[in-house]
Length: 66
Image 1 (tube, rainbow, N blue to C red):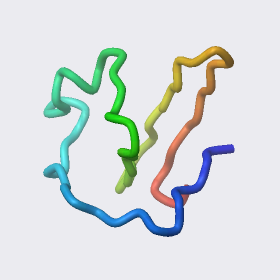
Image 2 (image 1 turned 180 degrees about the horizontal axis):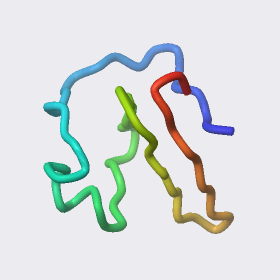
Image 3 (image 1 turned 135 degrees about the vertical axis):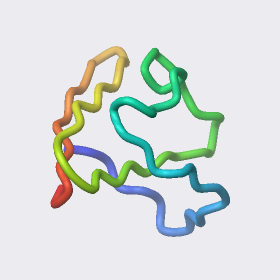
């Protein structure tokens, strides 16, 4: 199960929407955010496999309703 964001998190930046053919190349390889920064993924159609590469790897299938 994906973790919830802290209650006091506020947006400060938003990327444009993208598709599998327009996704920024940096998101296709292993990457991290700065400490205290979280990302929110909104899937509007289709399916996205989201992987967290950590000591205990996680794999999540994200859909528009999830």
